[in-house]
Amino acid sequence: MIFLIVNINFFLTKKDFETYCEPIFTKFENLLKEFLSSCGHKDIDIAEVILIGGTTLIPKVESIIKSVFKYSQIKKNLNPKEAVARGAAIQAAMLSKLSTVKNMSLLDVTNLSLGVKMIGDRMSKIIKRSTPIPDESSENYVTTHDNQTEALIEIFEGEDKMTKNNLCLGKFIISDLPKMKKGEAKILVKILINDDSLLVVTAYDKQNENNFRQLTIKRPKGLSDKLIELMKETGDIEEIELEEYIIRNLKFKD
Image (cartoon, rainbow, N blue to C red; front, side, top):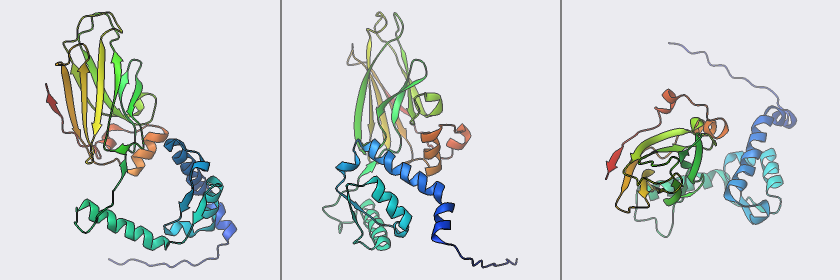
């Protein structure tokens, strides 16, 4: 088999480059603003911004960073390419639990929010996006019908307000709830996520501490960047595509 190799050389001005890349630069600026918003901080709260990675050598990128973090000190004293390589090496050493890496911690966060389905197909977020892992959070819920004796707990991952646009990770039923008027019987739903992205979802009957149901969901550390971006923006993802990234290992405990 023979391949034709073609080298293309052409002149490109700085202005032309920035014009062609304008959609990418705009998306980059929006991501920086989204980052500040999701962290609950304002630009004035950030003291320093360290530039690493070859892309930060592009003047337009540095200009955007300065415009977003206008109160911050922009530091360029690190080798942008070497810093990325060193960081990757340190992370690999920590993940492999090498004894040579000491007094350092690796912080991971949730890519998407985790929650349960409420009446009206609404998403109730229990663990919000960008929450440091491991984490354990809970929310209280009530029955929606008189004399309701069981409740379906459906766990979702995503950012849309409607669960139909998010990813369903699993579901289970808690039963033997006391017969009471709607809104009186209470259920506590707790979600625990550990360092290995293992989810443990537990529903407690608050009227009877011995009545609970638990679901364990084992999944990869995260979805692909493409799927995460789609779920943030539209949530319009085909289930057949999601199956390529989600592994379910469901175990019930009484």
